[in-house]
Picture 1 (cartoon, rainbow, N blue to C red):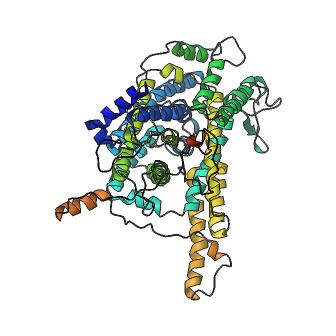
Picture 2: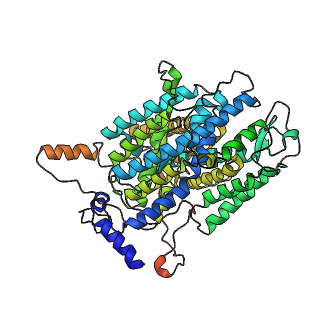
Picture 3: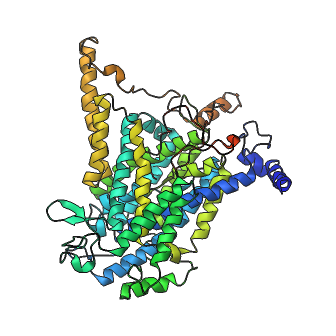
Length: 579
C-alpha cells in the first residue's frame, strides 16, 4: 500500500500538475520540499474541517441584519412572525452564499497563487458588517443593500491597490502592537457576541448587561433577552456550555482534527429531535417551517432573497464611511493572515516580509470580496484555520483547491447547515475568540507609548460593539503619544527622552520597497534580464495548529512532546478568526 501511494505521488509530481504546483520531484527550480500530492489532499480536507463552522456561523451573524427584509416597527420586529420568517429565509440563502463564495475563493487562491490558504467570509469583518454598519434588523447607519455596495467597491479598490503593491505596504507599516491589539480586541468582541447566542449573557436595565439564560416566561415584557428572574434556567444554555463549549475544548486538548466542527454538530444533533425541551424546532409556525426545510437534507437552495441585492447608492455619504472603515479593517485582516500563513508554510521572506505569489494572492482576495458582495455576504478573507492544513503537510495550492471542492459539496447540504442552532455555534465562537486573544502576548507591554494605545484598542472594540472605534482610538492615541515624544526628542537633540524609551517598539518602514514583484519582472524583461527574482525563504521550525494552539509533537521522537526554544508565536490574523 505504501508503495502504491508513493507511486501516485511520484506520477503526479512528474506531470504538468506537479510542475504547476511545484511539488517535490517535479523538477521545478523552486519546488517546495516535502510537498506530496496525497498529503496536499489530506491537508485540504483538514483545513475544510477546521473552517466549515463558518458556513453556519457567518449565516447566523449576517442574518441578524435582517438582510433584504423590511421592518418599520420601533421594536425592530423582534416578535413579528412574518418578519422573522423572512429572516429565516435570508439565513438559508446565506448558507448557500457562504459555502459558494468560500469554494470560489479557496479554489482560485490555490490555482492561481499556489498557496495552501483557505478563504471564506471572515469573522470580525462579518461582525463589523452586521452590528456596526447595518445594525441588528437594519438599525445601523446604512441598509443591508448599501453595505453590500460598499463591500463590492472595496473589493475593486483592493484589486488595484494590490496590483500597485500599496495594500501590502500599508499593512507592513502599521505598529505591530496595534495590529496585535486589533486581533485580540476582536477576539473579545466575537466571544461577547457568542455568549449572547448561547444565552449566558443578557440585557440588564441597571447595568446594561448581566446574566441571561432565563426561560421566555421569565423575561421582561417587550424586552427580549432581559431576564426578570431565574437566570441560567434555560436548558439550551447548559447544552451550549457543555456540549458546544467544554466538549469542544476537551477534543482540542487531545488534538482531534476538526474539533470545533465536531462540537457544533454534536450539539446540533442533540437539538434536532422535536419532542424535547432543547429542540431547535418547536411546534410553532416558525419551527414547522424550519423543520420542513431541514427534512430535505440534500438540496440546492437558490439565492432568493440576497442574490444581486446590491444597491449602488454611492451618493449616500455614510456608504463611503462604511467603505473606508471596511478598507482599513480588511487591510489589517487579510494581509496579516496571509503573511502569517506564508510564514507557517515557510514561504515568506524574513527581511521584506514578502512571500511567493503575494500580488496574485491579494488580487484573488480582492476579486472574491466583490463576488461575495453580489452573493449577499460580507468581505472574504484568508482564514487562520489554514494553519491546521499546513500542520498536516500542506505546502501548495492543491491544499486550498481541495478545501474549495469540499466547500462546493457543502452547498448541497444547506438544510443541515441552516439547522444549526445559535447555542451550537456560540461555544465555537468563544473558542475562536480565545485563540485570537493570545495576540496580547505579542504586544509590547514594557513601554506605555505602545501598551496604552494597544489597550485602548483592545477594550474599546468590545465595549462599543464597533471595531472601527477601537482602531481609531488606538491610532490617534499612538500618534499623539509617540509623535509628541518624537518632537520633544528632536527639539532637545535627544536630551528629553522617556526613561523607558529603549524598550519601545521600533517603528520602521520594512525593506523591499513598495514596488510589487510583477513590476520588477516586467522591468527586468524590458531590459533583457529574463530571470525570476529569487526570494530567500524562511525555515519553518514547527507546525502550528490553530485547533489546539499548542506545539506539534516531534514525530521522530515517537510522538512525545518536544521542548521548544522560546520564541514569539507567529503573528496570527489581527482580525480573523479565529478567524
